[in-house]
Length: 424
Image (cartoon, rainbow, N blue to C red; front, side, top):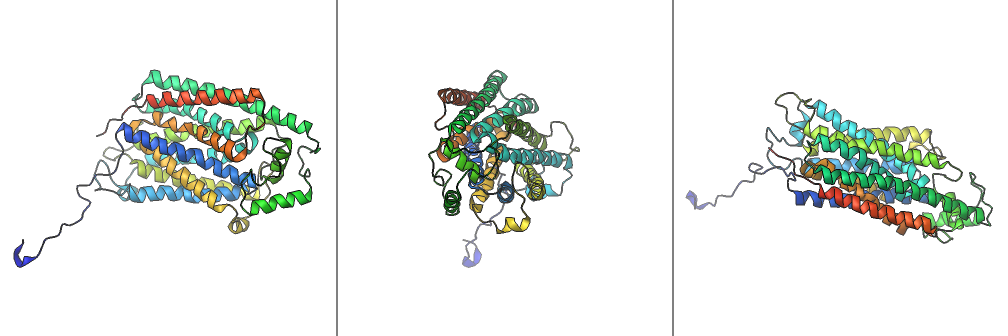
């Protein structure tokens, strides 16, 4: 006991603590699996709101807020944990460093992600949640994973990795075939319907029936519950068209697929951009300037995503596309219908992206692209919540099963290629 009979109490300090960085393959795979669940669920929430009739501009505003919030929370917690070191500074220390080349790469990643996500929000209405996610995810793997493999100095096993990439490419072809077959099924149902619905118009439903549907939606009914018709029937498709915010009857199939492939190209580039931001493979930083820690890079990435997303949505409020009505910022502020689901979607997407980048920093960003298995989750929600593919033809069901099986094989192969990044 010290002199004077006083007991010395230990002083709490950050010294000796190490910043939380995932380095082992097991932890990286666990994060990738969590990212898979989150990234496969948030599109279903936005699709739910679109089918209820909420304007996509309003939904994307809410989504953007919590998507940024997730990055801020990660930066202020994990990014600040431990003592700041020269080779691995914490979040606040990096904000004042001369690391702008890496910051610009991170912000470029956020730009293409924001444009890609905004495009998919409209593509879901045209071709369905399941097919949109499968085609986009497969393009991300074919393009993005190839870029990440070379950026990561080939730490993944090429023979296994590119076998998985080939499987994803087959999944793209099957996904396109599923959409074409399902679209033909829907056209046949509508042509046989006795309702006499006129494609491209909004006048196919009796006012009393439309009023009942609106009341159900206001009371929070899910897409399935808010209809009077059985899922998969022509009447169901007509009711859905009346209720949803993006009108798709009479639209070209190529228009929907064009949006999907455009979104796929954008989404293919965001992970390689963040890879360059955190690892500086092109040696753009000055000597002695440390690489961006993944948490700092993710913060800049999300800031860019937020600014671009909000800017585009302000434009789309007053100059909408895909038959969506005009709105205003005041109308958005007063639109509380379904806001909680849009906010949850943004939070899930933000956390999912953060976990993907953390896992990729350890096991290689090429292997982390296994989160593109998210269509497996999205397809589950599409079938359970929205009745996609119900009462479709045997041909559509056969193609759907083949697509999902090929997707499972592709993801398993990609995960098996995981390596381990050398750390200093």
